[in-house]
Image (cartoon, rainbow, N blue to C red; front, side, top):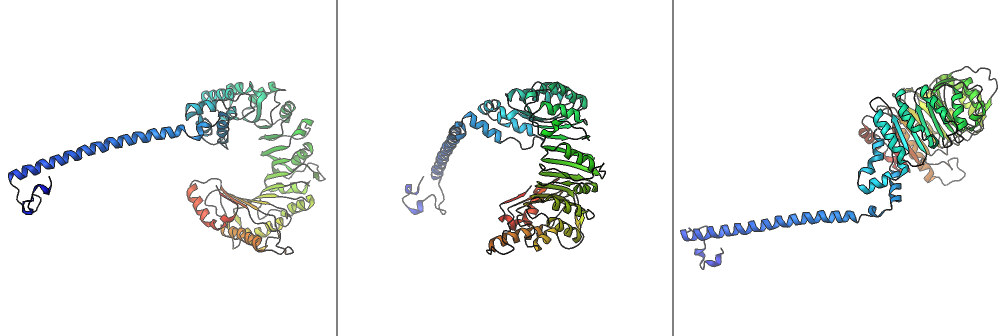
Length: 490
């Protein structure tokens, strides 16, 4: 109904001053319901169109997935992408599930994943009575999918590992990197692998303290170069098979200084050694022991370890880790070693005690005076840390102006937990000062010429129960040094 139906204004039924008659009321009521019906029909049409649009959008999305570039990747390239998505650390919880994830996306991905042997060559097995059945099934499936590629695995358990060991032993010719933490009786079954370990390159064993047993493995594994042992070995009387080793980790057992000297003499080809020294007994070694191949040495243990530096000369040492340097540590032995070795040390790692003061800073500076070629400095803070007075080792390094270790370009810090707070402000100032020196110094004859800026800085929290909060706090403090090429807070 419209006002055109009423020729005079006074007759307009829509006028607020008009009193409708019964006939007009009927006319208005009829027009109302007709309008309401039209709106309802339009609403129904709109709902129908919306449903059609929603359906078309779904169809469009499905069609777009069919046109996705990933669908046109060759299986070989897709499998290579899966390989790059493998976990970095298979010891982490859920690592095996991460490997299997691509096979649970769609049929094509599953077919590609199951036919890509490289995805199934690495296993970490923690065997208990409850997990024995599932772990055995996992080993059987993964080994069958791995084709003929080399296998790497870690196996931990007791006597219940024998069924899994039996499956793995059938493929011992493919072993490449293995780590065994099983009873000695289980290890002895490996004697049957004699002559079948041609691919073995890395061996870690827990439960064996006999060098002769390792010698049998060495004689059967011409490529074996890295060995890790958790029990104490007697290094006297080793046969020639040990000469093939280039890396040995013996840091899980305690040795004397004499044991270490015997080891260096017996295994003259070592390039990397980790060892724990807890006794000053030298056992008749009256002269210096030279080891020319050794380029990396990590010494931990008690204060007895400092005496080791009185008896060794390492002309080619490049990476040195000495454990915690305490206030009472006799650094003169370490300094004498650095002078005697005449090395171009590039990486130096040490632990920071729970309480330090200015005399400790000076002690570290004395050591660093003999490391002019240093590129990387690593500081490990423990579970607690307190500063007894003003200052910082980083402040001392800044005051040196850069000439003390001009080639330093990487600093790495690890802390035991978020409550440990190194002097981040002083560290930040050190990094910024070296950067500004590098940018402003144009005089090639200045003592500051050749001072490299810090290009990489890493902070790692070992046991961080609130990673987000800690990360934000440290990031805020270190925000001004975002100019470094690589800043990692993990």
